[in-house]
Amino acid sequence: METLSPQAVYQHLEILEKQENCLESACCREEAQEIIADPDVTLDWRQAISDRLNQTNQLLAIASVGQDDHSY
Image (cartoon, rainbow, N blue to C red; front, side):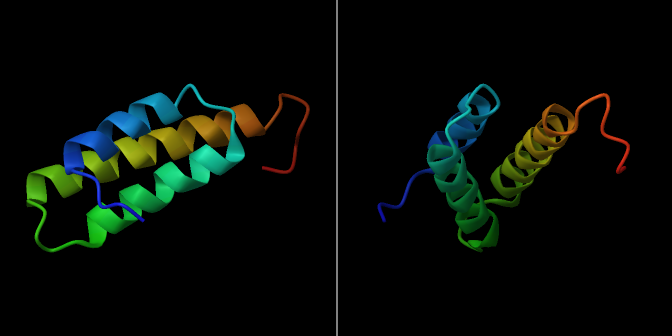
């Protein structure tokens, strides 16, 4: 897999919020995890990517759980 810059991964996560393609979504999340785990990436970038990934995951959870779903 090609190593992407933190800026590119951050932008991919922004696009991810609007995506419905599971494969692309999984790839974007994997890219984000790789950047977050890379000690050579600045803490500021790792934190920004982590925050955006968290926000995206929360939006996905909201979209995935319907109003009539009482399992949560």
